Length: 350
Image 1 (cartoon, helix red, strand yellow):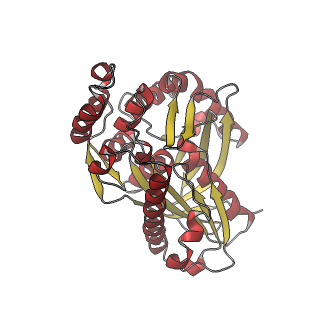
Image 2 (cartoon, one colour):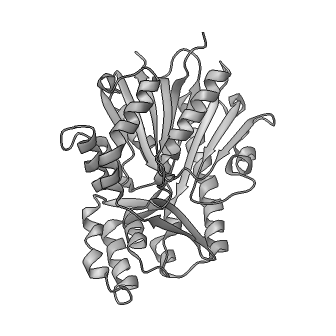
């Protein structure tokens, strides 16, 4: 019987530019206040989002001017490659491995388009072998970190002994739009940050956690809940329905079904490791899973210090938890466009 894959190491990386929430709120008032009639009513989102600071590939001043698709793509390619190399290099170092040991790389990103994909662009700087397997993944949004983790785990299990590198890079701030006077754009401006995470997975002894189950659930007729609209200026965020209320009503049976198919009961889970999409989402998840208020403490800390970095965020939470002590069994969860939920079951390695 093929051994389950293990998480060998994990790392995170953020760009150099710091966005303090109070400064972003002031800048937004200057940029939107007189042009957007609903600004005063919605401005409280900057203070209720639970965010103190975030990181960005561009300084705050950059966002005061309009930028077209070409400029945003150039910023994405430069920033995403740098974060890819930083996160991947740290994960390899923590796993006591070199880039030439990597047999396959799964690259997850939904906040920019790169063809050739990011791992190809970073290959020479990293020192990957010419025969490395490349699996770029686009379009999973906030669920991409968990789904990408599951894809990497399946690759590791299918080819025991191979080293699989997962790199998740999201530059959400590049979706800030001066030309869109909408509720969704203002919420994105108050929530989004940039960051990357990398993991090494391998079906071998050792590591910090064993992956013993994963799955996804897509709800029908929900394409309009979350996603991108694309025009000559770039991506425009879509938040068409109340995601917190949808999560509170629907997430538990979906996750229960995923775990059940893996032979795991909800009562077996000691800790849910959740993507902190926003403070209201965190509260909704606590309600949905019957957790005490404040139970998702690491999620709140990551949201406070990094904002919503889309698919990378949940891996920041996992890294925080590994810095203390991972419970005997946990379930890593995220929701994304589709509308969908992804789940991975983790068992702590003694």
